[in-house]
Image 1 (cartoon, rainbow, N blue to C red):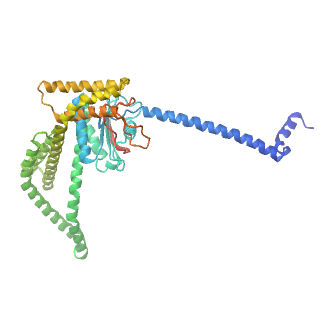
Image 2: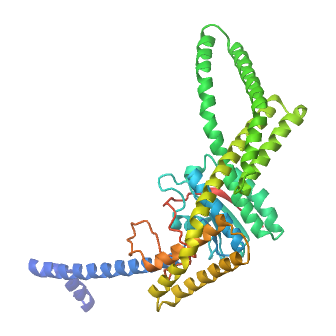
Image 3: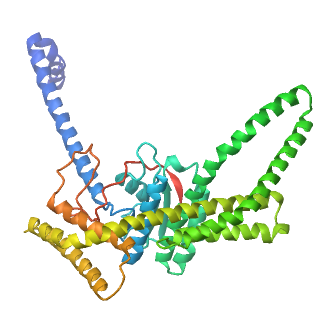
Amino acid sequence: MIDKSQKKCLNTSSFFTTQTNTERREVMKNLNGKALLHWTLLIAVSALFGLVSCHAHAQEFPKPKGYMNDFAHILSEDEAVKLEVELAKFDARMGVEIAVVSVKSLNGYSVEEYTKRLSNAWGVGKKSANNGIMFLVAPSERKIRIAVGDGLTAQFSDGEVKRIIENEVVPRFRKNQLNEGLVAGARSIMSVLTEERASSVQAPKRSEDKAPVYIMGGIFAALLLSFGGTMIIGAIYDRRKERKETEELLASLPAHLKKARAAVNRDDVGDRAKELFSKASELFEEATQKPTLLTRYGILKKLRDASSAANRAEMAAESDRKQAAVAREKGPELFAKLPEQFAAAKEKAAGDEQKLQRIASDEMKYHDLRASSVSGLVPDWVVWYVVLSAMSSHCESVVNPEPPRSSGDDGRRSSYDSDSTSSSSFPSFSGGSMGDGGASGGW
């Protein structure tokens, strides 16, 4: 006998055996259709949440104002403008983008993760070289990070980055001198990279001088001499060459330093060139006034460094004079032209309160500059030109706004865009990406 439950089981298990092939195919088609619909809806919902999540993360990062981005308001306006000019000059001379950033909060990220994400969001560094640097400070969390792109890690080691943080930045921050620490850290980064570039330019020449001698010495040693004899000959050669180079530098450097002094003492030369000249003079004095405290190679190294610093001082002075000449020529023209640009921008922005407020803010700064010039203060066109250029670009972005760009474009934005926190016409960085190089600290 078969009870009811067993009969039900048999009926269920024999379902497919009692149906025709057509009926079985119809059932499977319905089942597959429902499964496909289920998975399609699940994937769509997941993708929607992913887009919302990505959009939320994107909104956490501010837009870049320029090379100097003081969102935590550590610097005065004059300090920020001056540092912006220095960083722009450095990029023009060295081809390295340095973003200096202060933020109000890390938004729950570690300082390493936030710096890396922000740098990649901005694209700091040249796209093909990944040679950007981001120097980030978060005063609320008391954290510091100097992130170095993969293309610069060979020139700017993690140890050197750590030294800058611990020796230049942290001691000033602990004295509550945040503005001085931020400026000192940025200038130290520029100094290290400038010195590294100078030494890399000199290195190939030294290698080319030595290569034929070492090749011939190696062949001669393999045929006639022992390994010890080769070492002796090489040491004698190096010593003679070092002695000759030392004598040449001792003879030439006084005139070189005199020339550099004349260059940096001219009008329109900034502090950076003068600091480099002072360093060159100090190194030369150490090499010549205290020779008994140094080895022969120690003297030569100081003389080499003095020559390199003097060269950089002359280059910096020349760059400052050229930029001052441009500012002096274009500044007055821009100063006279701006009232007309303000009027055109206000007419174009009619009804847009945010744009009108930004224009009004620029107009107030402009009137302050005009009042100071009327009172007899001689305009510092080097600084004024940077400020006036930013105001002019603001107006231009309102009168002739750029069309919307696709995600594959270069990302340039109007500085009056409603979702932009930028206060300048800075277009964008160059699309580089940031790896894990660099160092962090706190105070």
